Length: 297
Image (cartoon, rainbow, N blue to C red; front, top):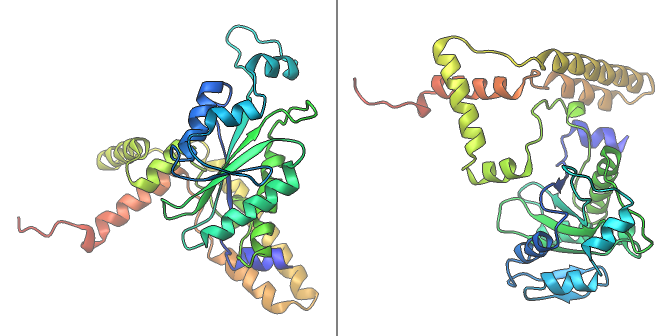
C-alpha cells in the first residue's frame, strides 16, 4: 500500500547507475579513484570505516590486492582475441534529485554498502555535491574475498535501487524505486556521459539529436522511430494494470487511494519516443511567444 501511495504521489525516484568504461584496467581504475576524490580534495570512506585522504588510488588498489593476472585466473574466463578482459571493479553511482540532503544520500549508501558488500567485496565511496543533484560514487571490487565474481544483472540493479530507497526512507527522506514504464515515463535512460553533459547543458549528442529533428520538422518529413509501437503496447498494459488495481482497491474500501491511482493514470503523459519528445519541445518553443525573437521585420 505504501509503495502504491509513494508512486501515485510521485515521490522522488532514486537512481543507481553502473559506469561502464575503464573498469578492467588497473591504471584506469586508479585514475577513477583519484578523480572521484577530486585528486585529494575530497575524503573517501573505505569498507572498514577508515577516512582516506589524498591521492589514494594506487594505495587503495594495493590494499585490495588487485592484480590483473590474478583477477584473470579467478574469473575462469579464457581471454581470446577481441574479447574484453573481465572487470576488476564495478563503478557505481547513487543519485537523488536536487534538494535532497546530501548527508542523507551519503548515509543511505553507507548503510546499503555495509548490508550488501561488507566482508565480501572491498569498496570505497565518496559524496559529490558540486552538481544540483547529490550523488555518491562507489567503487566495488568485482571479485569477493572468497573468490566469487559479482556479475551485475537487471535484477541486481532493481534490488540495489529498492534498498537505496529503503535506506533513505529510514533516514527520513521520501524516496521511491519503480520502473520507468510503471510511472508512465517513456524516454530511455541516458548513458552516463550524455546524462552528465546534459546536466551541464553541453551535450553534443543531445544537440545533434535536436538539430536532426528540427531539420526534419522544417522539411515536413518528421519520422517516428520503429519502437513507437512497442511503447504504445507497453503503455496499454501499464494503464490496464493500474486500472485493475484501482478497481480492487475500491472494492476493498480504499476509495481515496483508488481515486489517486485513477488520477495518476489520467495524468500520464502520452507515450513518446525520444525523438517525439524532442519534436514536442521544439514545437512548444516555437509556439511560446516568450521564447521567440520579437525584433521588428
